[in-house]
Length: 72
Image (cartoon, helix red, strand yellow):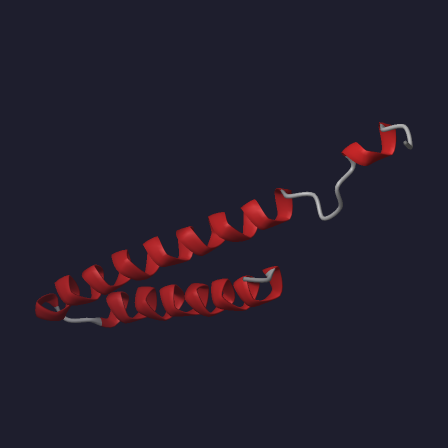
């Protein structure tokens, strides 16, 4: 997956986490546990996407080892 698509998914996941955090603050006592479960899942997904984006950013786009090789 290209980094732009990953970044878009990460943004959407972050928005979902923020909405669930707000929902948790407003939830009554009986509904808080359900929202906490949803929030844990959404947070884990967000972290996974964040790691994927970071891994993509760390990979070099061009192969640099060929620069020092002599031509045949």
